[in-house]
Length: 569
Image (tube, rainbow, N blue to C red):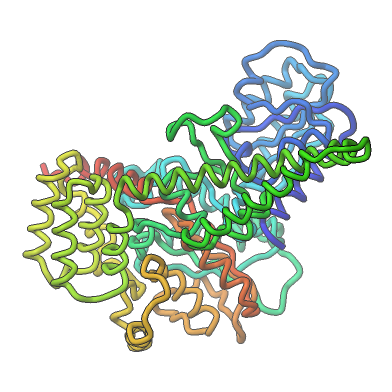
């Protein structure tokens, strides 16, 4: 079952048995969960006439006793307090309370004590405490994502909150899928180990009864890994549709905000990009930029044909047919203009920032050896006036990750040049990245030069040549998925938690959670793997969905927070 289907099932069950006019009340987390899985028109069909945030409801005193209130909230202490205030002086005729994760007994007692007027009809747990952006890709939208980079001593309470949120999200995914997994984690990451152990404690001790589902022949696998094992992927420019939109413009909960990019009509300032609601996007989300242009041209041609036939209205029958087809026609018109707008906007950015030039060097740094040529290429781009500050920084970071051990002298020269060309970047950010995710910290074979099999594969690829120079990079996750599929994942690198081991054959369901965030390049890798019918279904999840801007922001924030704590008195 896909995650989107699981969330939609929960929403259906929430709304269909409550007849009459309803108001749906959400918090800042559950509003994302609902918005990616359910459209506004679908909510209207379920007689939801108002969607409100719980903060706003708390401020208003107006009575709406003709409406039934359906609350869908995370079970936080703040939300319980808000509900208790609501129940003390109820504004709605009925209260139906749904929570996206496990309620504590004390919370249930507190709610019961507050319901003196007996307006609460039901209290249920529906485990949708995650945002299912695609069928096999989820995010938790964790607010302070940079915390995963900090040593535990810097801010223990905040780090505990971060871990609790991640464990809650992972638990909800498995409760929604009705599975209890075997758990493994990346050995070199303290935060991955901590989250894996806390998840195991919840599933096998604290709530073992709840997770005691009917056993499958082979237990599913949860693998918890650290973003810093592959710092390369979130730093690269992207050239496939979904990943590229996120890198150049930004996607939040399957919505793209175009307000800052140009003067668009009001209805096009925020557009939805969802594989569930847009057939063209579903067919093209993993295609490369060159092919997208051609496919959009075909879409425009089809639309023009339909528009022409609509102009040719001769009879009453033609008119009736036009009216019947009008909603579909309007929808298609909106869809065509959305994709044309996005591709036009991205083409403009590619041209302005000279990204084809930049990306060619990035891909060389990511995929091929040759330190002398790489140094020369990066130096030339740093001197190029057309290259933006963020692109200069990324190029130096990519060079540093690749050649930190081989060419310290040249690396210092690049650091100095970057500081003189792009003064706005804090000194030491590249060094901080190496401290966080340098070669000594990583488990995986990021550049395919440690493991004999990977060296052989790279040589073969070098001889065969690549189809597209801009999309030759494959994320480290590709190797991880491959080693799980072939049963080659080493216990020493990815230990099991507790005494629950994978018995016999390989797992049929795998959830890979990346602490620190996923990228759309990695979700593409998982989707293509799932489409290959290997007999294993992969789901990818993370604390956020990264693009290079967000990854760098997290890095800066972590660097800022670690500075005071590392000073020696």
